Length: 441
Ligand code: DSN
Image 1 (tube, rainbow, N blue to C red):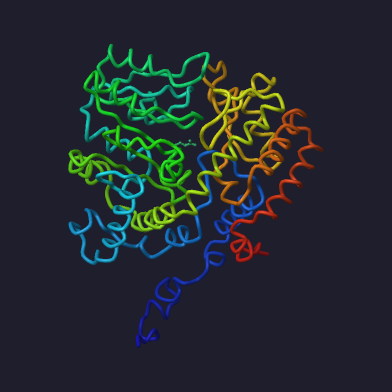
Image 2: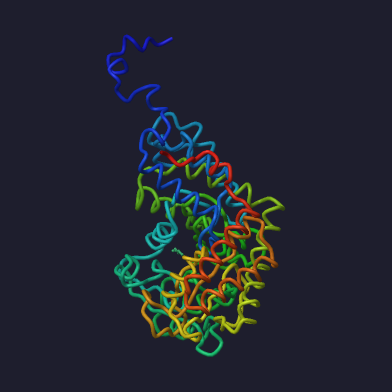
């Protein structure tokens, strides 16, 4: 047994040994309080930001595990560090499960985020100055698909496509025309605020006509794809990228997949091209998430996400709101609140006070800036994780309507806030954490 009395550092009260086991509440009461407040908020408000979810306790506890301490630059069996035998096991499990889940030839589980997953693809398939085609941000696209503020818009020549003005559905004819004219090296398809399915076979044939590769970014739909309730682009795309924390309900992180022919180059570009040491705690947690997503229960969960989004959309439409593209096939609805005489910014703030957390979002051809917007993006992944169903979606639509119609009236917001609180208590999540996180004196 080690004799701590003989260790001058331990004897002097230095932060070593058992002193590293002090609880957060003692070590850093200020950060403890932020975690406690965030926990309380997530437990008692309706989280309806379409890109958020509640990861399982198994996923969260893996994120908080000692895997975080380990350096493992390289890939399983080919590391630049000793002592990698257990993280190798975890990463291999994550890779095998990702391949099974999305039916792909190759998976790299190391990207720290979705943007880094996309960066790995661009660097593997493009040279600076090459041309990419991506969806316009106000039409539902993503910054990393070529926005001028992102590296993707700065390093590459970017051409965009959008949705049809009348139908608000992806305009494949425009994509094809742009591809013919600009001869891109990659067509990027994927979106953060597009409520409909994408015809990946059609994108493939547009790409084939001009000799382009296809990158399908399924960050928003990954859980739905895994469960078979959204089309899988894998048979049609050269590369598939995603995050793991949205509908897939895993830890915060990225994942990138490809056909075998690109595997070596893609791996090289992820590490050492754009990243250093992989986050082994998150990779282990991704493995847990993929295992969960392979279960029959997850399929039922994903189906319910879409059923709930449809129910919410119908209930909003019945209350007079216009939905972009007239509905949804996915986990989110995009509500045109400009038509109802308010901005997205106002709606977001009013609803937050009433306990419904959503985000303002541009709608196609929006005349307001991204900081103001005419739309609200509302998603069902997190409330579905709480076990809520169609009945609760109608109730939520009613609350949203009451708050928006009253333009955030204080009394109505207070009333709705208390009703939201009651519903959240009836559908608890992480209540174990609330019990374990008492307010400090
Ligand atoms: N920021 C994410 C979203 O909310 O959709 C996309 O990366």
